[in-house]
Image (cartoon, rainbow, N blue to C red; front, side, top):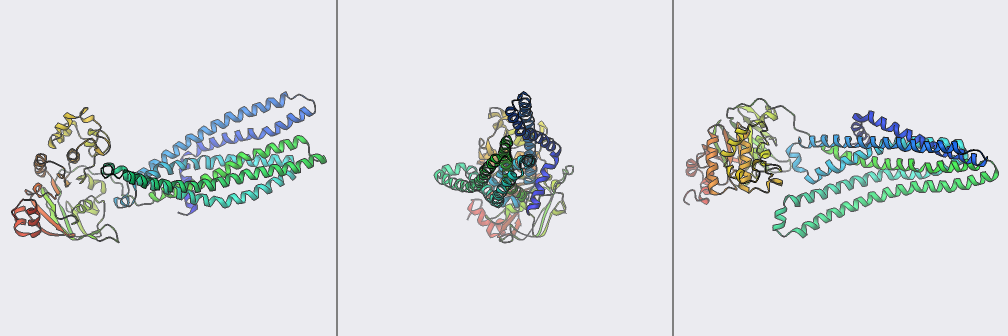
Length: 574
């Protein structure tokens, strides 16, 4: 994105809060105005002391100015912080909304740790730039202009000396700002990379332990953390240089004003009280100049964060649609010359795949690994779109289905049967929040989860741990199947649904699948042919195509590949 476009996006986050920001800004301005009056009141105190008059009045006004400035500034600061939290909330909700609506193909290319970094770290930077970086910089600019006006009233010559020095140093700071933005962008990318590396290790925690790879993974994460540290040091270096330049500008200006002002006092062209007030105003330049520099730094950080956020927001999202009322009829499926690859530079996964699944009954997809079986499910769920050919569901082109309606008609059990952190009840009802208690109990009984529920200390309300770590592999599979059944799908997709079940539970699940197949259409991917020998039809896939379709007996007698698969699993004699 171009710089002006990024700034517009930043301001879009401010727009809903503009009224409260204006109020906070006004309070900050009032606090600044109270502060600006202090050097002038100090001059009156010095003059009163020199003339032998009463200092009570000026001191009272000075005290009032201090108290008013403190209270009003505190109120403005609270409003800024409150607004900042609202901005962060809005940015995070907007970003998470986009992330969870991205296409699966785009998420496959992204790293979970980096996505988390954008939601947490990058959105937090927006708070700084949109409150302190912009609004407080406006207040600082007002205070800076006010101080300059008051200094001009004191002595024009001293003001000219001050402005020349500040302008020279300000030019240096302006040259530094783009470098801060580049360094900050690289630093945020490095933090995202570190999060991705750590996420990889945590997702495979047991594998890391079992492989004795703790030291190696610690080293990999440490290298990523070191790169993040180095990038952060670059930001710190440029930021420190900008801060030092600002400090030098004021200090050099102080020395110059002290020298020139002292000479003017000695010559009688300037009162001592005016020189004191001028020097006080000079030091009053430090906070606003520092705030402006800090605001510039935060703006560069915000621009870098905004670019990373917009990278996600600009990715195409799936269309939002509303699911139609459920239709209880089983749905048929037809693939006609379907061609699909995962990317333009990737090999074909489907090369003219054609087969038909009539409504109702059990159909199985079998074949060696890499034949394209799981891709069939990915295309049916429209996680990916095929390049050519036709896919029909219930006689209707899959691209003509509203996405929510299509997925509402499908029940999908993934190969690794993911279970989410939460209670067993929350996992079972994840895809069917409106299911009744009776329907929930029926699904539990169907999938033989009764013993699990009885064994858990809190029954259905028992937390199952991160990714269902407190459940066995077979229990997670049965939970996933029960979850899909509660959805009352017209087409049930089971990807290796029995891969982690023992012989007894596999037999029971085969009975469940056969029972479900009498009510709806069931499409199963199976490597263990024992689970599908009784299927109404079996589709044999190989090399991205369909080589045979038939029953178990027909394929044993008529397809060499299927006969070989059956023989290796002792389902037929070699």
